[in-house]
Image (tube, rainbow, N blue to C red; front, side, top):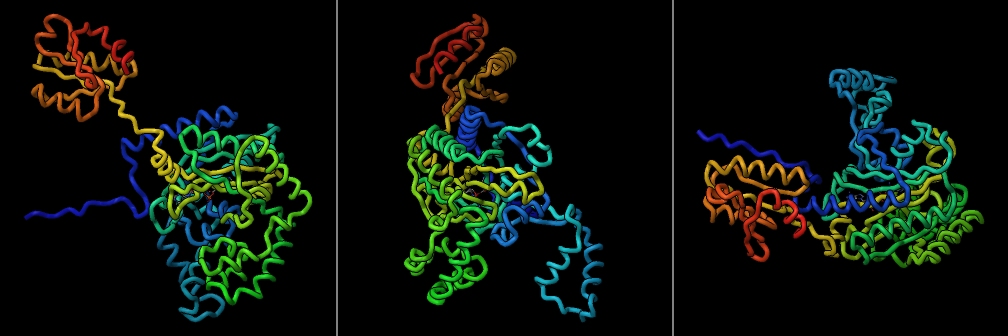
Length: 461
Ligand code: HAM
């Protein structure tokens, strides 16, 4: 009887990246390493697992990311302990069994466990970088710290093109400077990087969200303004008008747009220091020839931002058009228990970046196979293996099949693999010590001593 074994598929919202696409990913990453090194950034690698509290404190307990999108769990998840606590909680404060709603019970259970046991797959990395900065007392070394990172992030969002549950970011952070010139330099580096990988069609949107002082005054004004108009708005906006009024500015509902345009803008309510900072950032961007668009409605979905915020969007991407998000977070170190340390940075969504790179079609997933070695007859296998090993040791990408094949089929394989050269070793070639080297592009074929092959191939590549 045939038992059908159900294949296991990748988890929803995650995906496998395969060659040749991964070649493109590597090229983009190599360029990031080069450009960031030129600006004197060093790479930081932080763990993917962090305490949940890190993100609740930094990204913000009331944000979509923390409330709805994080992969959080108890480690270890001891079901017996959970069942015991569950029973205890149910009986607490004279509550009859079942008196907790599901959400209340979940929150109560979560509260019972110690902080170290509540872990999260990082939804972003800025909080981790600042945690590491504090944990390793980097501030004691004085000066500013420039760090960059590459790696996977996790958010439980509704998957669609350009939006995944496991996605990748390339990010950079500068800690220790308030200077608006650093803001401009960070953006200059970003623009240089995008240009290097062939992305030229995009918009840099810029705003300032002020400091906590000017923001709280602005929020009072916004709340007030919303009271008189919210009844005419969508249900999401009606709710946000009370819970998180800044998010109203993010609403995409067409009918709400004229109302939103008339709401007060934070950029008109900055205190003198924040205003001065913003003006210097924009004049410095102009001086450096970096085109940007001041976008008063740009509010970002993370709580740690202060002053400069920005996004880069690309028309080539459809609905998920934000390729980069970033900004200042001058209060974040203190929020995480560290010394006052201003900071600024950005994260590029690498998945979306690759889509844009593919649309721009400047970089190509290169066919990189230099040579395919064909052997004809048992006696030719050992010298073929030796040649392959020598060429590979010299850094050339070379392939060989260990199963015997007819010449016609072997040449077919060389073609399919898009090998630049086919090297053919038959009994005759072995006898006179000269192998056939076929240029698969021009079709030309010549005999060559084995030791000359490497430099010939290298020259022609
Ligand atoms: P973010 O705006 O949340 O900022 O994310 C940055 C970028 O990551 C987005 O513009 C987008 O390209 C990409 N991204 C976010 N979620 C997804 C997803 N589900 N699927 C695919 N791509 C996604 C941050 O993460 C901040 N840490 C940026 C920052 C660094 N601010 C200061 N320093």
